Image 1 (cartoon, rainbow, N blue to C red):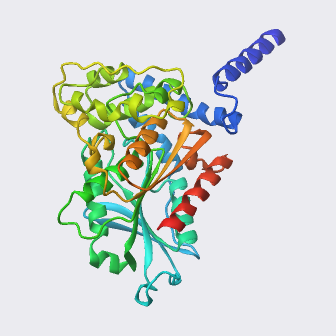
Image 2 (image 1 turned 30 degrees about the vertical axis):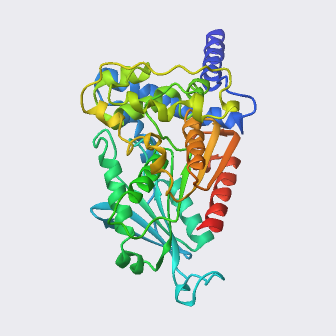
Image 3 (image 1 turned 90 degrees about the vertical axis):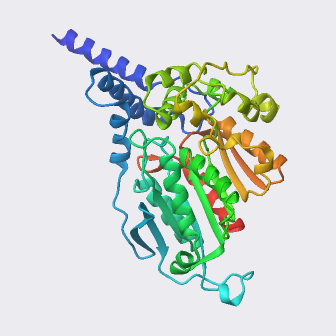
Length: 413
């Protein structure tokens, strides 16, 4: 009996060690903490697969537990006043400083009581996430207290219940609403000091909105800056060097990112299968592959050992094929002429992230178009790191990323 117990104990220990341990790079920050954190993500993903297989609940419905577990009720405190509003029918959590903003040396006297504003768009692959998650609540409070800014955190609708372009349209309506003169005045915001920012899928939405505003002839007030934190920017080539190098990395493996893209566009399982094999391009999207050709727009050091091969073009068809060619979904697809007038940009990328090359290629194209860009690349960083700022997943890199991002806003907004 004792031997059986010992055997079971050793077997359980071996299984646990096998399940937790992952062959991830030695130089990644806080490697073992990342393994332990990702163990929860992998367990939930396996449960979601099993649930979907049995027909109990769809994959994203199970994965939404991450959002639920991190959810908080944003409340006011001694330094920050929090209200929950609706802008054009979209929920927005508004964070404002209690005190009047200090007058800056470069401001005119009449501007002394006006604040900067950041419209923040959360990540989560357009399917998960919420402005009411504790890491986003903490980030919003940091931006308020460090910058004296008004932060408007947007609770856009999510896929798969709401496919593209619904999440994008929610965000675009909110941004246009915020830039109205009466709304800016209501929140004491300077019309020349408004930023849009977002991480991951939120970075995608921030980039797309920045582009669309420039093309709107009725839009008089424009954004001053855009901040894109490890953004996802294109759906045409899901086999870039970073997708290949980091396909099994924690937090966002390639299979999950591809599933996010497929769910954003459609619930058709055929689309997911074709995207997994990178054979999803249609005759409509094929001419736009030149804008995501990483052999041209990715600096040589990022090529690593990989050689470029253009994605195969299939027959296409259906609404999802049309969305693939839409720059509102893939901001990298706009021609160079549409980039020239974009606001100053901050782009954060991580080495161990399938989305690394999306951000790096956008930096290359923005700079070639004459846009001022600050590119901060974290050689030992991983996708989503900025959000791991709350105990027990409080990574030191999250604090550094937050500090650097807020410092850039202070200097440029």
